[in-house]
Amino acid sequence: MSGERENGSFWVPLFVVVLGAFTAILNNSSVNVAVPKMMAIFGADTDQIQWVVTAYMLTSGVVIPVTGFLGDYLGTRRLYLFSLGIFTVGSLFCSLAWNLNSIIAARVFQAIGGGAIMPVSMAIIYKLVPREKIGTALGVWGVSAIAAPAIGPTMGGYIIDHLSWRFIFTANIPVGVFGLLMAFLLLPDGERRTDRRLDPWGFVLSTGGCFALLLALSEAHKEGWGSQYIVTLLAVGFAALTLFVLVELSHEQPLLELRVLKNPVFALSTLAASLITIGLFGGVFLIPLFTQNLMGLTPMQTGLLLMPAALATALMMPVSGFLFDRIGAIVPAAIGLTITAWGTWELHTLNLNSSFEHIRNLMIIRALGMGLATMPITTAGMNTVPRRLVGEASALSNVCRQIAASFGIALLTSIMQQRQVFHAARLAEGISPSSPVAENVVKQLGRWLGGGGQGTAGALAILSGLVQREAFALAIGDAFMIATLFVAAAIPMVFFLRSHRPVPAPETASGPGAPGLQVQTSSGITVEAGRAAG
Image (cartoon, rainbow, N blue to C red; front, side, top):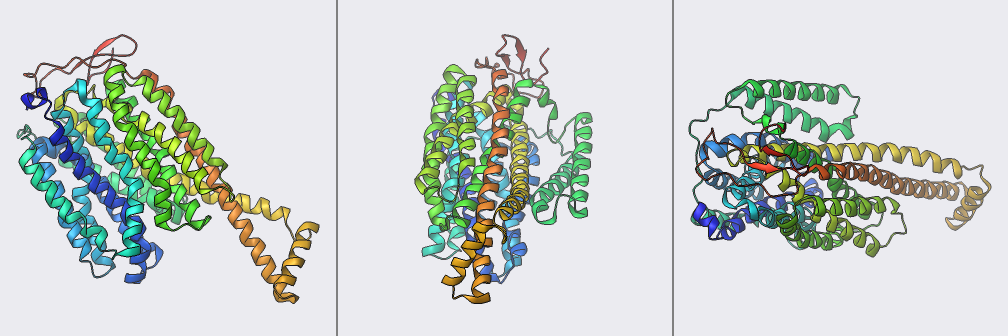
């Protein structure tokens, strides 16, 4: 494998893992657009049909923690083949679904493979690519993680408008088969650690804890944060994950090597990436609500609005990786996060008169900053992890981002709902029937609607609808303000990320007792990566 890295031939295997990751994320973002269609076909209500999305999210969330162990035990190449194969077969099952229960079951099966693809593909890249080129390689790989969620709604909208909803899943099958063939032929065999044993308690606690926590976050906006159901789920989730930490720290072969968080660079990188994820999903989640519910755009039109931002991110990811390989993480990350925070802040000024072009331009600016910052931050942390632990570190990083994404959507939804009630009450005070202005408007609308009591009632209904629309727009603006705070909170952290590349450890030191990488931090202190800095 080292010969391949020296010859620079890692680009072909890199394309293979990028293909699998892009397919999984693209499909998942496309499914959201198909939910209303499936709702009508299967005769399901809103709460029932949401399980098509929630089941995938929960399953992938509980699968991710075990991918580090499976990658070591089976080998990353074999795990990647299994993951992509399960995802492809799951896509076939989804395309053949005949009722709501069958599509939910198929989505669970699909998520077993889809949830493992991202962390195992990152682990493969770290084992294939020399550290001095890892930024550029991860910049290319990161296009799949950032651009696919924006491209997915456009593709899904086109399929729904012109083809059957089943084609969203059917399209994965030839791509998955091609990816499996490419992976079988081109991915090198990874090292296996057959001496590793599964930590059963760690598996049970991580699975139960992640499931309860993610379920609580996904259902909180419907059930209410103070409901017994949500409080119980949160308590069970936090208790299970606390016990998981205690078990893992005392286990000789933990499911996840949590001690890697003693590495301050990796810990800060993971925290910063989680904060950015909340801000990222703020835009991905809130903008479609604004454009479809207030501007009246279709899902496909919304996707076309987001497409230039996806292309901007795709352009900046390789650039940011190139810059990281040459000047480190601090400069591109700080500039990128500043641009992202400014773009997110400007989105809070959106109103009912905002144009398509204005929203598109703000999203492009925001995407440029996100593309410039995200990969250097992630790479700076992962680069300080010993090669033998990259699978576990990748799994841990992806778990944190999965929880951060769910938390961000739940928090911003709750804030948006509360602020909509607040703004509606304030706006209603200004146009009460006793107000001379409101009375005059009601009279004019009433005459236009035919006069009499029926005309007056219709006029009041129109005014109430306008109040709710304006309150909804203001509430989305408030949610963007909160999303900005999370992005801004990550800015100071990037100045503590090292600015120099690590010195690679000898190739012979790859076993369980191998030393970590010697890394010079931004403060000039040399530490052994993977251990606490002294």
